[in-house]
Amino acid sequence: MFDTLSDRLTSVLKNLRGKGKLSDADIDATAREIRIALLEADVALPVVRSFISGVKERAKGAEVSQALNPAQQVIKIVNEELVNILGGETRRLEYAKNPPTVILLAGLQGSGKTTLAGKLARWFAQQGHTPMLVACDLQRPNAVTQLQVVGERASVPVYAPEPGNGVGDPVDVARRSIEEARRAQHDIVLVDTAGRLGVDEEMMKQAADIRDAVTPDETLFVVDAMIGQDAVSTAEAFRDGVGFSGVVLTKLDGDARGGAALSVREVTGQPILFASNGEKVEDFDVFHPDRMASRILG
Ligand code: GDP
Image (cartoon, rainbow, N blue to C red):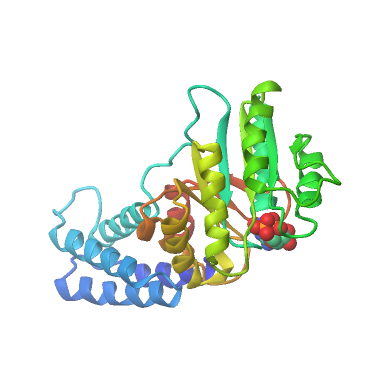
């Protein structure tokens, strides 16, 4: 996903190599090139601004270092600033003191929530947890079946409304699922919610009602990195409508520019916890800001 950005940044930084000393003009020129590379990759403007001012300020104020030449010093600063906008330290999930730990998945339809639910279920099970999936997307025909397929593949049970009982109330299903998790001693509950193709008040209200019914330990906002600039406005809408404690980036295997998704952490203040990079259940990992920065800087 970040190949073009990566190529641009590495070539900008390569131009610095071999310079014995960097003038302020060199730093300004480099900053300008980096700015263009970030904007072309769809990184949100406020994020670009704070990134560039951080790099400039630190590069100009950098002490002469014995260990690093000036070019290496700038590369180090760019790397550290990139790690910073991606969230700094890897943020681990918060587990409930008294199980079950409840994790709510929210996001637009097609963002990859159901696929992610399966990946997370398998990931937790591999670590010795006893997860349960909950089908609260009762709007989309087939959504329950899709989750059941995902659950079967991960060998994780799915809590869903009884067939034949009509559509069912997702808030009610969510509430009852917690009782079921306690009874059957599942220590993790993963609640899949309904999304729409665009941000919609009714969907936000339903997600907020489900949130109130289950009081999640984590609410994860799932965002498709392929949607480009809309990633930021969608994140803001979910932050205001439902609130979330973490972000999951999906479809990082795509070939869109992806910079908007990288801006979500800085714009919303909430950390990126996981990344999904394919349709298969194993195409998924904990998000490490430092590894992502190294990947982008080549
Ligand atoms: P939901 O509507 O949010 O539950 O989204 P789904 O989980 O149904 O995913 C929508 C589509 O995106 C499906 O075709 C998935 O196979 C696909 N998908 C989900 N995650 C990824 C990913 O990381 N990479 C790719 N390439 N496709 C994905």
